[in-house]
Image (cartoon, rainbow, N blue to C red; front, top):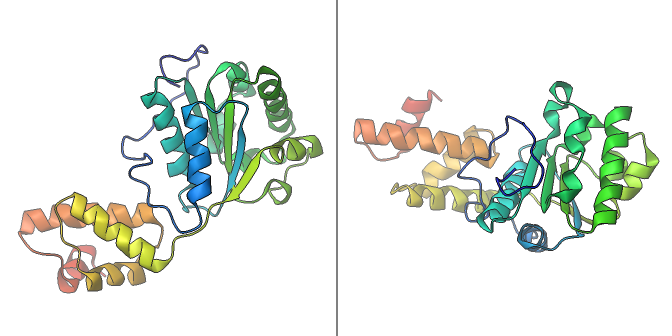
Length: 236
């Protein structure tokens, strides 16, 4: 939550500095989604967005980016990853309707937990009544397929806009890797980029982390990125 928020809660969750809209590489077909998230961040209250897509598709990056944009504008925001629900209380949801932007990540993590489902349903109702807060949630499946037991909650989740996060094609991932490398002053040849795509997990977070390691290794060893060098450094 930004320091400008009217609600003071203690939650050990911090937004990474490098996960913004500027650092996000959108796949084809996600333009309308990005525009809707930016609108939520910039003040389009009374908007609800349900974003779904597979694990490591970039959902969390977009949630972080939406909060970061709101914070840039001195608007209050609150980010809650429900993967940690077992260690927190539903009381965290109380008063969130007074925040400008609320982003709840991995909301399907509480599917089948009655107390959490009731608390989220109540939050949706309060958001609708207050007409101040923009509410963005993410999940790995549609609201109707995510395993929620409370029909009223499913209905509420479908009240706003629903977007499926479109995955990046390999060519888009390659372009994203090369842009990331260029930002670091590093040249990533096409054959090396394709080698990484073929040998590693294909989510961008993993690929970017490996690229960061290779960047440091190339500086230490004063070598360019080649397939033999990458094999040596990554022991592939």
